Image (cartoon, rainbow, N blue to C red; front, side, top):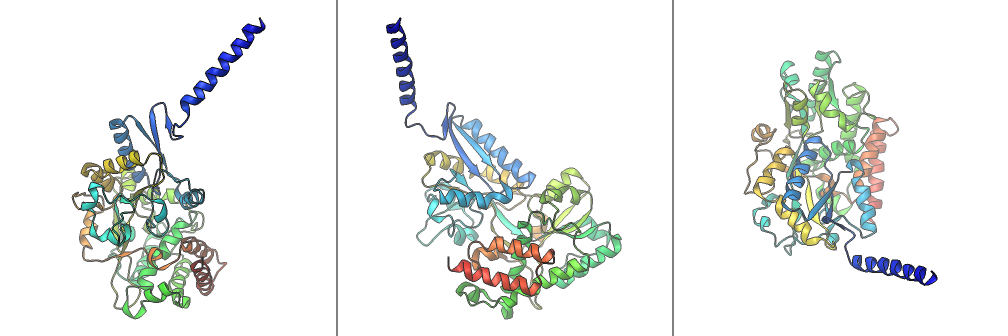
Amino acid sequence: MRKFISGLIFVIAFTLFASGCSNKGASSNSDESGVTLSLFLTMSNEGEKKAIETVVSKFEEENPDINIEVNLPGGGYEDMLRVKMAANDMPDLFDTHGWAKLRYGEYVADLKEMDWVQNLDPALDQILKDEEGKVYAYPLNQAKDGISYNANILEEYGIEPPTTLDEFIAALETIKEKSKGDVVPLWIPGGDNWTIAQIFDQMATPLLITEEENSYGDQLKDGSFDWSNYTLFAEKMKEMQEKELLNEDVLTAKFTQAAELMAQDKIAFTFVGGSLGPDATELNPEVKVGTMPVPAIHEGDVQSWIGGERFTLAAWKDSENLEEAKRFIDFVSQPENVKLIAEGTSSPAALTNTEATNYYSEFYSEYEDINVQPYFDRVYLPSGMWDVMATTGQELLADTLTPEQLSEKMGEEYKRLRKQ
């Protein structure tokens, strides 16, 4: 009996050992059905999510040996990626959201040998390529950020899309008066404070860059910028709040409410963009959402689109599944999928061999002569300043910072972060 038990124990032990050996060397990103790729993106609107999920499903059908685990952490994206960078444990595929070279450069694989590179829109060269020709990420689409508006409300109240900040504030006042408070003139979902940073970032370009006599690009780059020049827009934001031109719940309203409120004709203007238009129209076919460039601030200046790449796919250079990651990028770069994503995200395509008509095409055509300026923080601010713009803007609207104090705090953090 003892011999039998001893033999049984040996057989079990050997079986477990053999089983362990058979799995040795298998990727932790693999399972019985094949390889699993982790994909992290900054997409947040429903239309954007549907677009990427559709393409992923198509890819998995054609590549049954590869599964893609899509992660869309929203406002927590940057914090999650910072932790992963510190641990040198990046996703197989991830969105560089404007920081392909400066923040993520040492983690990304060079994509220059891929076929789609020859069709990359030259406007994106300085963002996605370096002087040696390395290509840091694949652009899923391009951004033309400005201000979204309810076209029906503007037509009802006889308002033309404003071209200057003063005209913009006057339009907000007209909406407040004529709607008798039923329509929020400027809606800000400040409960997600990155949306406040978005406003300050977009408006920093006309404030500090595009008008010749108020252009401080060189000083911002060399560290000599006088941050008192930043105060004007903070004063304008506070003025709009004091005139009750913003939503009362500006500090608690959530980004996810935008489409429903726009569909109910409760919003006139908002800096929320992306798939807001089609998302709202899906809820209410009668609503029409327009988009316009950001208004000029200084006399004599013109409007600007704010942009660059919106969403990208970079491949982690140390991924155990780099070949499969590149296979997905190649799939996404095929014209039918480029078109699907561009139209699904209501943004222009980033490859020149694909034409895509999206929800905002008529508005992009109307403003086709307006220049696209790069996102302010990506060119002129050290990494980490986005969070500072978010928190200082939030504190301004909470009455815990004055416009002057906001500028002082921005200056202090700017100097601190430049040294890191």
